Length: 225
Image (cartoon, rainbow, N blue to C red; front, side, top):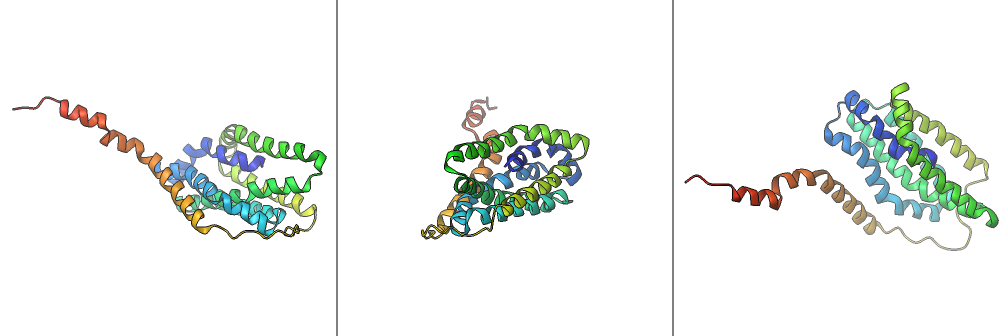
């Protein structure tokens, strides 16, 4: 969770260097951030559904493995397409890893230690968000921005090993049947997030050219006879 949280903000400090090396346009820089956020937000419900259907530990390991693979793609990227594909895959992986690891902590911890376990899960996730810019800036300055994502791979391997050593990953055996995934809701959620992101990206341009204030100032200008 520390690595997942830091990944969302560490890239901010590395974006200027990434823009130069990968020849990113302004839109490419924006989507280097938005691709992760939009996909993770749109797929978070599917991640929770996967934890219910296949078991929290198995879904956690799959999500963390995907996160590591996506980090490899980004670390080795030499084009904008590879970078954005890796960031989108990272978002999908985070959507599976975050709810699944929380469910694994909730179901694995003893009742008297469950509060402390969930508090540690939340604390490390928030700590990752906080130290991400500092960590990303330091690594970019000292070793290069690609090390940020290679470091993710090492941390994901350690986390997967810890989950695997805790026992075999099996589906829930509590007798409840997982509900079918709401694919219609998933598509609508994904479309709404994409439209919201595109609207935020273009609102400044739209406001500069089509705002009511600019129209009023245009009509108030003196006209030549």
